[in-house]
Image (cartoon, rainbow, N blue to C red; front, side, top):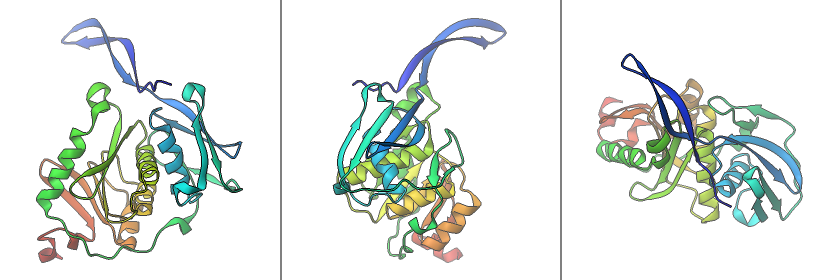
Length: 261
């Protein structure tokens, strides 16, 4: 079934003291249900693309699954309003979901046991390389260039971009990337994640689940994400743009920053 990520709408535009009729694309937003072993679990507001990756990544980031082999069947239903996931074992739905911060109202279960062990500080990267990677993120925003109003995240090993996801919800981009990692059996360590979205604690947790040692955003981190990054050994970078950025945790991974620690 064809995925509709953008729609065309007509609107009135006020421009230089005059009204005019205009037409342009807008990002598609849909309510997509995730069912597990035949039972409805949760609804996600999202851009209806990469729905298999979204469902798999969501279940991974919520600690329901740890690898792709646990999934027996995954099938987006007609109309792309539901993703039906069957595991090769029985599983209980979490008893408590909480609303996450940010656009499109994501959900997650309240469980700090999902946090991994701290990441050793072994990788290093030149500041100039980080700036270049941010340029790669901005160049990857195909939907954004067409309709605006959409977030983009990429997963890279520092050389090659291994996964790209765009969505109206910033949390969904990382779930989709996690789905790509599991479906392609990529290792879950030594990754760099770059995103256009604000880094909340949920975004930091999803990045940590993938083994990211460096998380970079075009905008701000939250206080809790900074605290978590310091605890988990993750270098957290915000406001990365125009050859400048702020480093909020573990700056020793960035060349030259150790002179200021």
